[in-house]
Picture: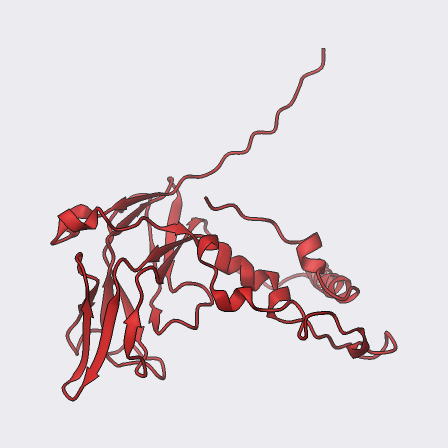
Length: 255
């Protein structure tokens, strides 16, 4: 009798733990929500983004002859790589409302419940770090109560939620070798200088993206690679839209 082959799908596991030991108020840290998959927090502005401007493909915008340069009314909703990044990994959410007020003496930041949400560092901390335009030149950090553990050989990119330029802050990026180091730690961020109001509980403040560590080296692509580049571009332009998603995109799974 012939062998019966069964396809086995294995999933890597990432573990999140409330870092109670590092908190000054451990009795409250256990009530902090664990991270959720990024696909659960797609922002409303993206849900309203169209695949085509005006709602449908405008065939009249394409050139009348293949020899001339075509145009298209595809919108951001048609960009699979843009959305793919927003659906990948996990999001740490703010566990309390954070209130930002401005007074003559400067900016004041308060939150409603423990554990501590933000650490404001000394003015001379990271003084050589360039501050992005439109943000306060004040070094602040999220006091992250979530520890991350990945399988051997895997690290975690800790960064600002991908493509979330609507948020009134920019979380800085770091890579943690989370297969051997497990702690929440503080994550620096910049606050918009024009923001005053409430950053609501549940706002994503950090994206956690696990990846496998490998050794890399760069080189210039050879003629075979260049031919593939030209072919890929030609094939993608040969259809009005959707070529990449149909032929190249691989669905990722984060649960």
